[in-house]
Length: 100
Image (cartoon, rainbow, N blue to C red; front, side):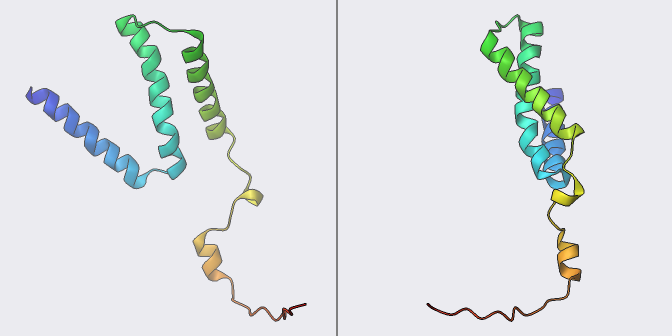
């Protein structure tokens, strides 16, 4: 029982570190990937049945995650960072708007 408590506490600490230092997108992608991996592990370890819907769903999640991690967006399409926004000088907009 003590070993189980120790292992569960390390999982909690690890998850909190991932949430603290991890990227928001990676946090969002982690749960479906874990579910997909557990789907295949439950088939191997516990002989749980698999059907075509579960396999296609898990496969599409794994492939889309791999594509996202291998093909990051280009620099031109990424929004400016807060540091870049703070370094730009602020200018006043001199246009006038008239009611027609």
